[in-house]
Length: 189
Image (tube, rainbow, N blue to C red):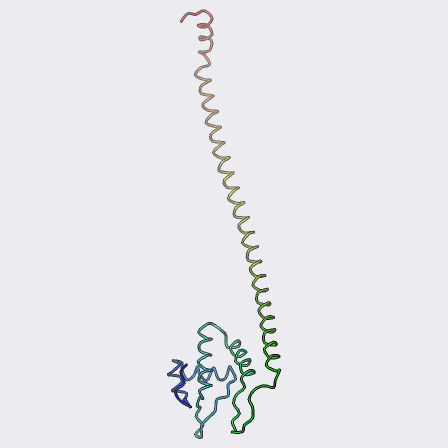
């Protein structure tokens, strides 16, 4: 976000970010942000706070929950502490060596969280696949059984038709067998 002023009122920032005043106050409360007030008691946002609100808006639009955003912001503050209000020449940089420890701690935590999430996703995927395979086996078994029943029914009808045809042939030809044998033996028609 482009910073143009040293201070923004809540109305100005809400218009810039296209968020309601209520939403900005909600983000302040949930992310535990310290927003200064002027001599009349009205909130004003420094360029750093304005950028932080912009980051919160972007992370929300990406689907992150406020708890996760709060955690990310707290980790950012650990690396980039808020400026000291007095005009002393105190250094804001963490003591030497602490940056590496902080980064290592952060990376270790990210690694643990990532491993936990991956493990959870793998387990849930494995369970889902097992259920789907079992379901497919049952469906396939039912299909095979239905196909076998239909085939058996067709075969039974076919055999019944063959039996009827043979019975009809026997009835029609039962008296004629003797004539044929007679004609074949004696050669007369």
